[in-house]
Length: 174
Figure (cartoon, helix red, strand yellow):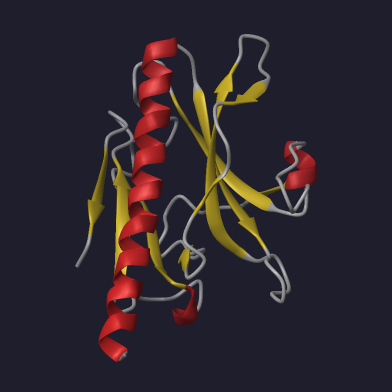
């Protein structure tokens, strides 16, 4: 039984990192093909019986229209329920000061505007609006049972790195 549990945990972690990487790649491709900015939003929300602001556990992309309005390109993509994106800047450099759902003005299924999100954009040339002074932008995923805002990576984790200059991503599994 412990072996099966370990395999399932590893599978959930790989699935989560794959979802994140694929959505980032899709956002980059859409920015290039549509020749306009595409915003990536990473959502933090609580799932009952959780209290507080919740965990970063979903991603969604938006096309930025000429009017400046953000139009969803697809649905919210949730990570497996046992996986989260660490909210600490030590393990996830992209996670800075989140905006509230009320400030963003967009309602999510099941949580409405009761969420927070961090966002950045892929530009029409495929690069990002993330500072190139920091060449290491990344998001670290791990199991929710490990906690959140960790000071060091747990034994089992996955990191998705984004190159700000060309927008390419890569996944690191230890």
